[in-house]
Length: 127
Image (cartoon, rainbow, N blue to C red; front, top):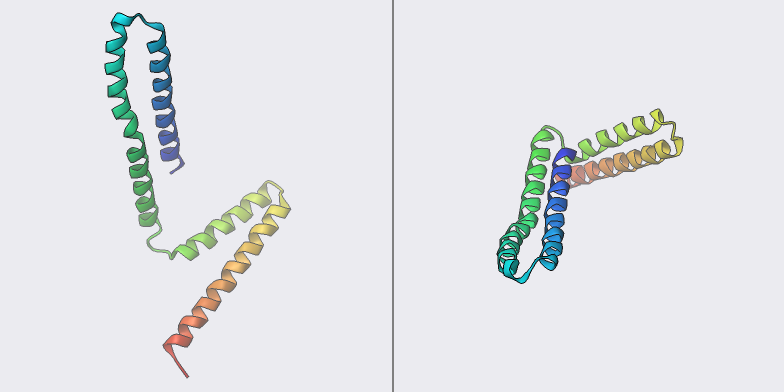
């Protein structure tokens, strides 16, 4: 999914770079061609306005793709799995403080999850 973010970033840079180039070109051309450049700038501004909706659409697709891929797991279990992965990554890079931090986060997440389970059980079986 990082590829989608990369594509959106490149897309943004291309549009903003083209806007900059159109501005520079419009300053350096004679007055006869100024009207043509203004038409190009107007057309380009319509495309530039589309960058934001396209970016939003890409992030919505990314969100639903992520949901589909993790449909069999609850999001909290998915988060714990990601934290375990980060612990392994930190251990491999020999960053033990970071690994200890991620283990602490896993412990907090598991405690929170068990408290939520107890709360749900208490609501289901009132005394």
